[in-house]
Length: 293
Image (cartoon, rainbow, N blue to C red):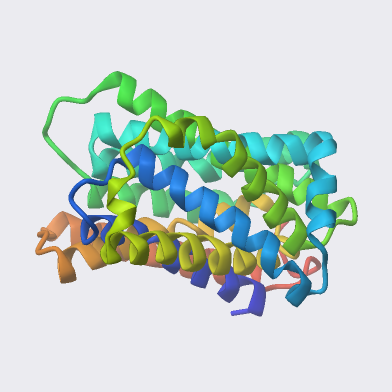
């Protein structure tokens, strides 16, 4: 696989550890509080590391005054709020499936309309494999919370909107690192009012500091630097399909570390997700001339 594909997949692996990290953290955390802290710490850290990546914080802040830059920051904040709220109502399995699984569909549609990225047949097939696999991974007989599902869909739209807006900034000449820093620092600022409403006493404990540092520095700063480098080369739709590795990693960690069970359907689902990721990874690693029309 090409380096951009591997960068996106590694970012997805880091994204997939967030739920387990929260589960192993202090008991007094709240989903909205953890999401807001993650974005605040990660956004600030992204600004601070920009000089090491050949850019300046001013380069990121300047993007706030552009339409795509404002949209990327707003969609980042929207994703955080909608995702954690949707998961809280619909459940972790179904909420994650709907939010992450709908992302590639929304991104493909938005990319076709706003970026004129023509969806390839391989992307359609790989995304269908991944979404079908995720459905098996998260299958449940419980009653569905409609509002929770709608919030998760809104999260998927927010994630896709952020990805497409970031891609538009990059195709317009902005480097990937300032684009990531711009979106997450602005998103963090927009969530400060939410942060003020949440209990934050858990941050006073060593475990709380470790959780905030890991989520902010590893699953946000490091992960989105990798994500941005991949997005700078690959189309938006395939990138969000590759990120479907996130719930697969989350499931594996849940089974391995949190004693969650994975039945026969889940094993089949995991296989389908892996097949879809490999297919998309191989297709994305080809040159544009080699890709399908």
